[in-house]
Length: 136
Image (cartoon, rainbow, N blue to C red; front, side, top):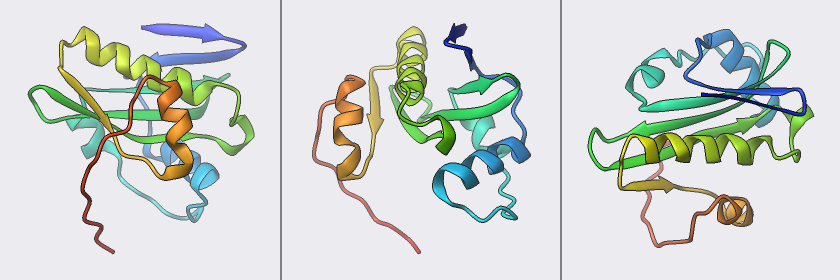
């Protein structure tokens, strides 16, 4: 599945490198530039992931984690700081939801901080109660 809107190319499950993902997360979340996370184990266990590109540069990413049954989870939603607030994140999330629907899962979950509530509600999510344990 590919979509092209306003010179931004969207794709489901393209080949994506650790270097590209690390650069994207460094830009969007302020991660150190020299951090070298290995994203491949996460990608291998995902039901899908969606990417956004400007030319060949990775500018957005959303992971759709899966429990192997009826539940999927939006995680790692990120858009490069130079491309935020243009609807790219919304398109990535909606594309991930479409993949989940096509795969016939029953639930798509997302956890988010309070300042992202409007964003996720605009993507079709409604707030629910949940629990969390965070390890440092």
